[in-house]
Image (cartoon, rainbow over all chains, first blue to last red; front, side, top):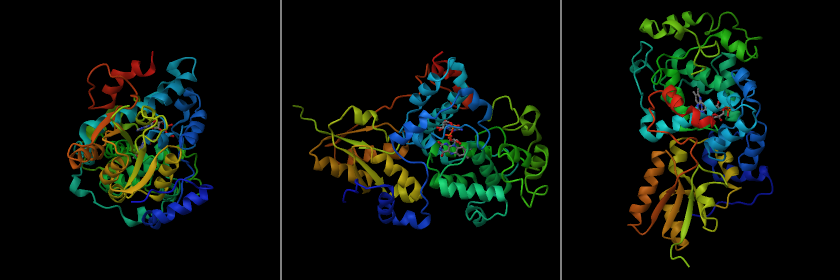
Length: 287
Length: 145
Ligand SMILES: Cc1cc2nc3c(=O)[nH]c(=O)nc-3n(C[C@H](O)[C@H](O)[C@H](O)COP(=O)(O)OP(=O)(O)OC[C@H]3O[C@@H](n4cnc5c(N)ncnc54)[C@H](O)[C@@H]3O)c2cc1C
């Protein structure tokens, strides 16, 4: 096998070369991400890291001050330890970095689980708590989802962003995953494979175990959302001019979503504090 | 003069110039392989390939495409090497490649795995059933408080 080329005059030349060398992948989707690879780009992004308290207050907003370091961390371009050190060094009190460091810890946690269970990350860790057996979930993603043609402007925009940029904000990943698994009743594995193909930070552990968290096969209850929640954290970007406003699939309270989506679920699953959801001040944060 | 000649195998969990495998062997030839089976199995999209390639261009590595076991073995042979150094990964596929390299070379090649900088030194065996248990056990160490 020949060595692949290393010298390029510029990015365009590199991309043209790779379109030839990896023609099969480019034939499926030949978008290039704005996120550039390499240590220099990673350090530039790390230098933009904001204050911990701002992160804590606004990270749930789609345009909030998140770090966008995931692709570098996933590929070891930056270690979790050095990102943590950089975050703590910005603060007078190290506690002010706690929320951000806690999110970094999620990655460390998933990696440790992965080291323990290996390919077991592809199996349901626990049964679904949705009142539906796994057989009731489809094996494949419906075409309208993968084509970004569901007719729901928010969902279709998220799918386009996945293809075009390879990055989705955490909240968007949760909404899209919940839509796939709960509104369309598709096995989380199908969605996880789809994300892994496109996310620049695609990581079997963080991705699969997060999908399982949304699905309820690695959490106490399924994650759902409603229009109000999506509208708030996208600052109305999709809802404002949506022709489906007031009658879309996500309208109504959390209780309504749960009754509609999980009529057979054990009611204790949604009991008490657990009824509240991400972004609405659930005590434990978004997980 | 050391009799041991080392090559470094860089994989996609550790694409930093500060990778412990690279840093500890600055003069050893290094290789990265785009594994065909992996690309196919995971349907790795073109944009991910571009990102990884851009990372590689900042590393002192030979870039190949094919089967990881064959390419790494072949690279070691070409450099008259009997020792491969790589950094750790939780991926079962990584472990598989390591053991196949040793097997296929019938013991002529040894593979040493270097641990990457841990995020936290765990005080004891961690309970991983839920994140909260893990976090409560490591929190103070992680924040350095
Ligand atoms: C369905 C779903 C799939 C996901 N798939 C992936 C994936 O393939 N790869 C991936 O790295 N993350 C994944 N995540 C976790 C998380 O969404 C991303 O890490 C985060 O959105 C990346 O953006 P950021 O770097 O701006 O994050 P920030 O909020 O700035 O966080 C900083 C870093 O902490 C880590 N991190 C933050 N939140 C999480 C989390 N919940 N789980 C694991 N690590 C976290 C990441 O390394 C991230 O770069 C997934 C989440 C969901 C809900």
